[in-house]
Length: 100
Image 1: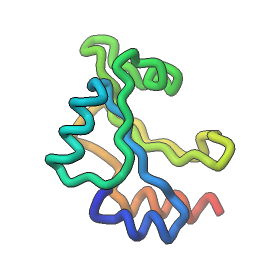
Image 2 (image 1 turned 90 degrees about the vertical axis):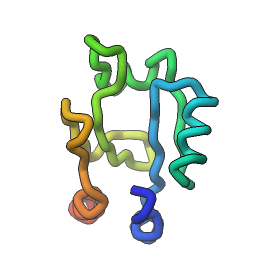
Image 3 (image 1 turned 45 degrees about the vertical axis):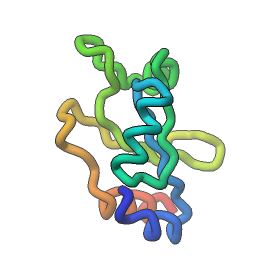
Image 4 (image 1 turned 30 degrees about the vertical axis):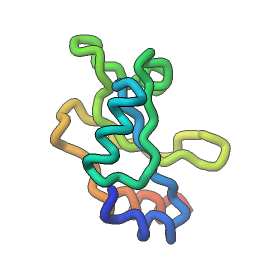
């Protein structure tokens, strides 16, 4: 997602990631990886549970991508159980275009 931030910005999309890791761990990861988008911390799993993303066996979030509207309503989502299978930036941008 990092490499497509300009495309997301032009499409009016703000990229935000959420992790179960504590804030300091998330911050260190973002700095090491060179992420400039917002990386939030949810060690209590509150948001992860709200969006039904908890992998109960491992106490981590399932991989997912969401598009929310200005009111916070989920307009599109991509869920998977495979950490290595994620929506590509082009897929997210295409989904956003289809919602207009």
